[in-house]
Length: 539
Image (cartoon, rainbow, N blue to C red; front, side, top):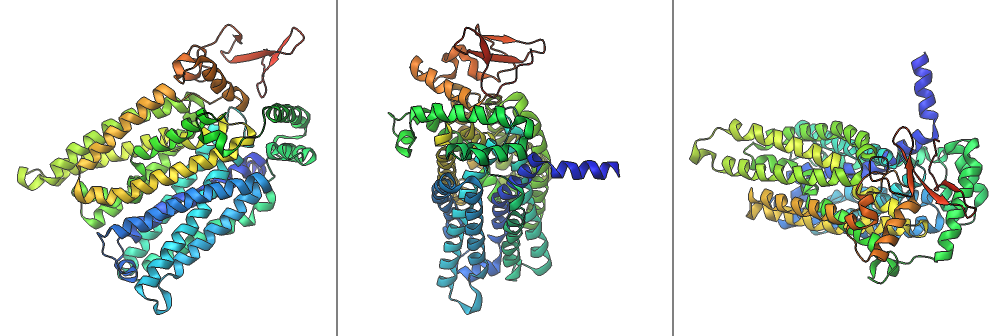
């Protein structure tokens, strides 16, 4: 009974509800990835759309979704800025649900192949509009309702749900495919329509959650902000937090509003954080895991396995992926975003180099008289480990960093730019991957080894550590980089932003308490020092 009460109390906790809500929304993206991976090989689906299994159109249908995501990120973030983060999420959910329904009915009622293909394309784009908006707004919503030292953990837990969605879709796909067969239309329609469970759950739980206090203060709704703080953080926190938010808002008002032009032009005030945001998503795409998620079975076929075996090995990979995401939310606020990305890129480069060798041996196995298991088993191990490395090091940070480095007036736009680049980069990767498989075969792995090496090097040189710092402290990095005239992390404030603030790099204007926690301070104008906004001084 005690355990039940403890669980009930945990579920009733607003922080937990926010994570559960955001997790369910983020799971939509993962579900789509797992959903299309086996639909692409369903004979009824291919016949209904009038395309061959190796046709480039297969990749086009998958990839246009990402173009929809890019547009949806802009529309969703603008709506969320104007009407509220919650309302923005719900509008995006309704759009994604509509797109999913259009995909489900494509080709029904004796429609022609051209009509079916057109409706499927439209459905993919509309669903992309909704999911792109969700991916832009939910990380902002979650970040603005999390503590400074727990933002990474919260988002990593939500992205673990992303992998849950991927697993759910792939398991349903495998079950209906092997029960109904690849010639049955319901083997591809059922996985599509099951996605509707996510919007249904989210709409049902909508009334439990507040608007973010930062958005309320930004729109001069301070009383609503106080109610939100009370619901999420407790009544004792209301006065301190509302004063901090009002003070931060006044400072941002003095600096003026931020437009997209300020973010994308080199002379703009937010151009530097935008470059960091853009390169984070480009580098994530260059890791190659958008391709692995969507075309997993084909990759295992390159390693020499049959179609059915490859599907079950892919399922095992996704389940392992889900489990290893637990490590991501344990480490991200302890080791930092930057460290995880640099080390992740290094190990991914090695993994893909090994897969190139193993793929080559598997491709020439009969000529060299190498048994399948001699290349297949090591290939499975390497790809499983590479998947876990990606999940721990690269899945979350490119989404998290944009929510931490912009001022409130630009945070939603920054998240939107992040999704736009993610959409365009993954559009290119998912469109080119089938072509790469058909023309380069296992040499495609070597391309990914090189792109991972580039991603790691760029991150080491230019990406600051934003964990365990307030939003305002992270903005200081870009101001000081401009004063220094260099974007190299090692040259700004003696490289302090290379590490988490409580691990090393304590400067002259800082002091450490007995537990090694850095408590950075500022002058309050009266000759005294006070903790910076959002910090807790344990002295």
